[in-house]
Length: 218
Ligand code: E4P
Image (cartoon, rainbow, N blue to C red; front, side, top):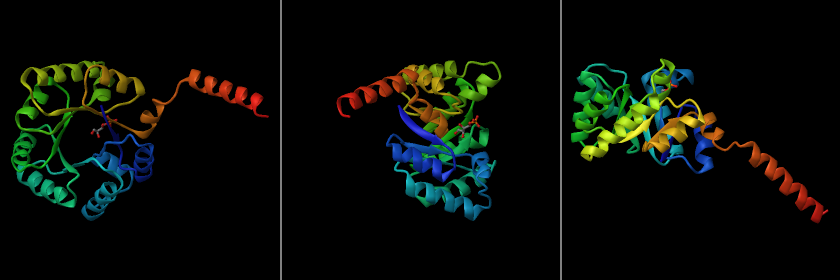
């Protein structure tokens, strides 16, 4: 399973990269705004800074909602670095843009996926990744992990190569559950990735090992 970090915070991205398990980054306009990154030039520069830290796919989202605007913006984003994956929304115009970029050999990530039908459409349009939002579905009492499983099965039935990128990951069990049902990728914040490290028996065990080592090596 690939691990992507879902943030535009450079310190968090560096920390996750230092851990040695980071395969890529996802961002969105809200995450950019959270870091105070506004204005086209600053946004493009910020993506470049992320590309310089991480060796992997970096999803950069378009803000246009029409096909021509998405193409213009996506092409500009793709120019920044070959690591850039153009992130497009699951809309009629977004599907057309997925097809356009896929035919040009530019990687895409179809975002805001909330149903298997949407994921099927994105795969048919040649998306490199689809991003079903697990946490936001859970928030409205719908099983987000079940959607991941459904999409994985559909893609397997037809041999689609589109990768299932479990997004909107809120806690470490989401990561484990998505891994169990075969998600190709998960994207989550640094805190959730680091939470995978934690187990009280690991802490207690280490404490005891250190205490016993000290007894023999005073
Ligand atoms: C996916 O690429 C989105 O950026 C993200 O995972 C959404 O997460 P949220 O529901 O926590 O905002």
